[in-house]
Image (cartoon, rainbow, N blue to C red; front, side, top):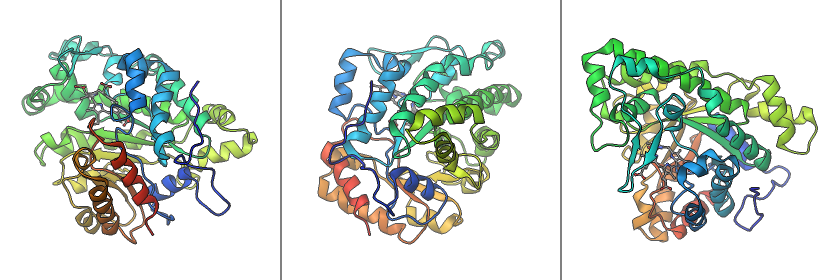
Length: 393
Ligand code: CP3
């Protein structure tokens, strides 16, 4: 069973008056003042960590994500090592297509391949929305284990892909050099594309609500392929579906909230219920982070999704984003990921400070990379990043 070791690096219980990592993260999501920006990294779990590589010697990736104990363990590894303010469930965006009936596996030569590619109206009709939540019960179980382990100390992030990004993978039938099929469908047969997008929107909304009910504090929608669209296409191909999803997300349903709460720590049921809902007693629903890669011409559309937090990718200066976006939306990002593999700890610390300075005095900054941790990231570089954020005054 996964446990969090208390080592010097890990986040210690907060002293009176000091924010817990969870509180720091949630306060920043709502643009409230914090002591220093919270920090977590996209793809913080995985190949850069020796303890993950050890797990991978015994289990395949799919085994890891489908076995709640193992998924919880992989999720906790980076939190133990670096004391991140938030844990992100170890899973994948492709679990939803799989639960809809399109399973996938890894090719020996790299990349992933699905059982079939969605090409026709009949393929779309065959995709099931109804059974998604049931088929993803391993996600529900992993999150409940994590909520219990993390208690009220560390925030727990659930996630999904965006309908657009999932459609690109599903129509190619896996990872591909170029994702042209979903684009072509969108351009040539809009109504059929909408059928697929509607089904994905329903499946994703159900899966995210399940994640909230299981104890997730916040949700991130990865729109990793948003930047493959023309800015004029983005609203209809991606933005509006994310907006529908954000609009559908509600507060935890009380039964599961209470159940997850009872597991969450040893406090009384009432305290726990409050603690779970504290995610936002005033607002109700947990914050949603929209991370859309390479869509710098679509700030208005991204704001229109209703997200509480926008992820800014590494190719857009955070200082510009700060000027462009209203003060009541939090910004997440955006150190260049490649620095973690290629640079020295000194350069990582210096560039981390530059990102922090660009956001100095702006409430609502969540420190992150501007995309995922690369597999060749050096541990000393991740440590330098975290230490620099934590010591920022
Ligand atoms: O952030 C985290 O630590 C949580 C785990 C997480 C994974 N994938 C684990 C993973 C998250 C949040 C994802 C999201 C994801 N998955 C995205 C969006 C983020 C992004 O990078 O833009 C996308 C596009 C995917 C789809 C996917 N999964 C791809 C393209 C691959 C790589 C395939 C290959 O060629 O190796 C994966 C596999 C994957 N997902 C790995 C991990 C740790 C690597 C598996 C391994 O070899 O250990």
